Image (tube, rainbow over all chains, first blue to last red; front, side):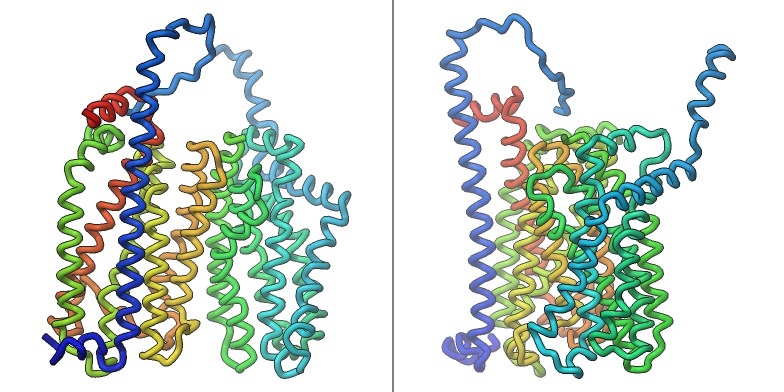
Length: 78
Length: 241
Length: 247
């Protein structure tokens, strides 16, 4: 331990505010980005689920295909 | 393929050489620009006005102007070039000329190089020619003005070349003007630093050969790489719309 | 070799791999970062010149490292996007650009706070700081261009061109210290050279750098997974995966 007491650790010989402000901003922003990324992932996942469920419900009723469609064929990379 | 077919194809392939195509693009851009003279004049007016703002807004003192005159002129020239970049491809894009340019058999990057050089001759070069007058107005001494003109002469083509990449990338987008500045200003910073640094070094009596050589290196780098990047960006933008 | 390369480009394959690795990346990253920061904050010896303010180094240097590495990795991905049109590469660029922006901001912010007790001023127009600020602008430009183009494929390729053009600035960042010899101290942390700082300072720094890299890996994975979900939601494998995950 480089400090004698806990209060010395907080004060850091006068440099405490600088050091702790840096660490606080770092932790808050990093954690914020992580939480935001997880939240966004979950909301997209949820939207997909709801979409597939409504698709599944309605697919039985409207199976009529359009007589002719112009669709762009894309080659999948799966 | 039979010989008759080959004979039919050949003249088309060899129709226009690369160099004459570049020359044609260059000449056309210059001619079009001289038909819309206001577009030629606007960047110059903007350049003069921005320079005028500094004595009015900061300080008209001779010592201040002498010290920061080169920087002011460089920043104003940079902004003027930035402002004119939107026109580089816009008109040709709107009337479909650009599409024809992309379809030409000649390499697109060379045609774009010709277009960019025309753009420089119509905006960058007049700025360089005008800068001694403004240099006198901000009380720069003769030697500084000469060096300043030299740095602008080497630097403004770099600005046009780098700018062509941004103009090509933002072609056809809604907020193209602001976006163009956002993309391009960071890339302009090194040129600006060395441009003003050269004049500052000259004012202190230091040798400027090294600085000028470095700026020349920027120019060569931009000349060789920027047309490729703009050609690639232009193809992407054209396929987008 | 080529089969592996194609596999690497497959979003489905990546989705599986990412799901498997993510817990390890998160746990490892948090553990290493916490260890490095606590060691650095409480146990590393005081710097005889700068006093305790030097402890900011344990977040400043890792952030600056990542800010630059992320841009370089984006440039590599941009080449892959332009040459091979690989889907995953542009998903990667799009997903990590905001992460890069955040780390660049953190490096600048912590640097500014560190500058106050050390140099007596928040901001110095020194080459390295300026170059970092340019990097911040570059990240901003990349994100703005990506947002401005509606078509996904054109956006990916336009961003790739912009990233490659901007990568010219990375050497300027790296070597600007040598060009303009000013206030900023030369680079303190190089993997290839023997450390000049004492071991008790260098080790916690190494830990926090590694930890932050792992956390970045985790962030890249989850953000890429989100992006893949958005893009591939019409495909069958995503449908099956999502519906299977619900049960």
